[in-house]
Image 1: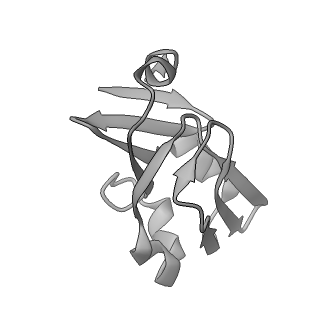
Image 2: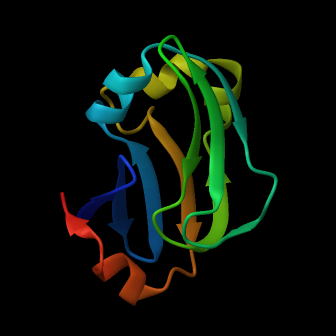
Image 3: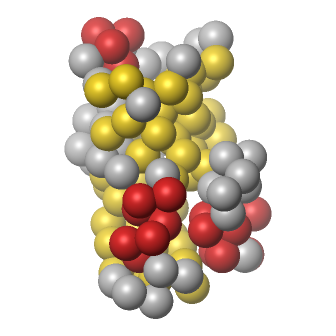
Length: 110
């Protein structure tokens, strides 16, 4: 199941929720040249997930839902341009667990 908020797709697979950059966000920021992930292990809705610099803007990406970070896209730290990929297996930002199901269900269907 996939929902959308804050220019991110939120894809649910079992108990894991993957935040993925949408094509609209990728287009708005241009080519990503630098990323810095949050050092926090737990996010609340609207907490900063990632600071990024693109060819068109600098952006603080916020979480559309809260949860425990179980993985970050470490490959994007070394190769930020991966976040421009159309492949969600490359353009994902973080994976969350322990998400409030009501927060997820309140998001708009993608």
